[in-house]
Length: 133
Image (cartoon, rainbow, N blue to C red; front, side):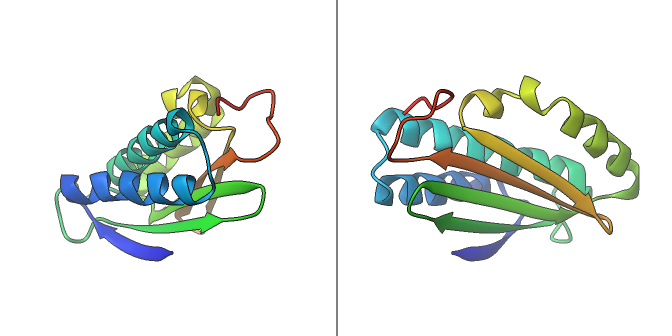
C-alpha cells in the first residue's frame, strides 16, 4: 500500500491506522498492533518536522506499508529541508533513544540525494528477543 500524505494531523492518524491494519492482517497481538500504530504516528510526525514547510501543502511524505511472511513494514520518505538535513543525520545516530525504537523491532534510516527514508519493522511469527508481541 503506497500513498502520499500532506501535513495534516488527520493524515498522521491515518498513517497509524494503516500500520495497525497491516499488523492486524499479520496476526500480531493487540499489544503489538498498538505499539506499531504509535511508532508509525511518531515517525510520520517526525518526517513532517524534518521536511520543512510545516503546515503547507508543499510538505509531503510518502508512505509505503508492506506485509511479508515474517514481518510488517511501514516506510516514510520525504525530501529533507537543507537546514534539517544535518539534524536528520544527528537523529539517525540517536535512533535507539527514540521512543519508537522501543515499540518496533528495527528502524532503518537512509538519507540519499536529499531524501530521507525511515522504515519501521515489526516481526511476526517466531518471537524475537526484542519483540514485544
